[in-house]
Length: 149
Image 1 (cartoon, rainbow, N blue to C red):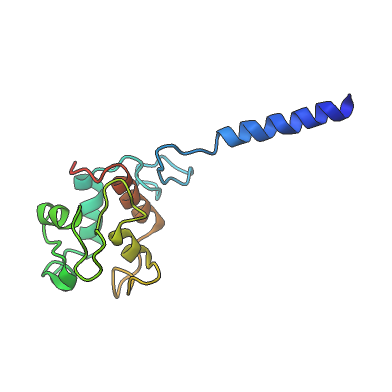
Image 2: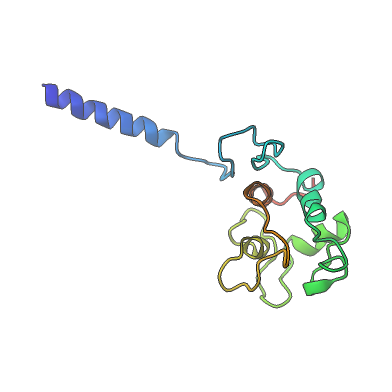
């Protein structure tokens, strides 16, 4: 009887632990903060206008030496043209879509920002890579439909 109770206890602990591991909305958040970006964690429900485009500006992507002057086949000078040139648009040389709404892993933009194998130089070139929080915020925005919000 003692063995059966231990086995039952192990099964119960394993099943409860498994329930808490699913993330049905596929959101990126390390669980150490509020998930609003202010504490170094990804924004869980990001806005394009308040969270995503400002990241591109802050990291220099919209400058003339980067994508502000149509460098690399992508114009990112204003919020409007950046959105229209990213979402559902094929990358100039690869043929993959830059941003696949609902699929960050399948988006060429994310692959370039993460320096995935086979996509060339990691963006931004000549600058520090985006932080985990910045990447997580962009991934969350894309996974939630890449809305123009």
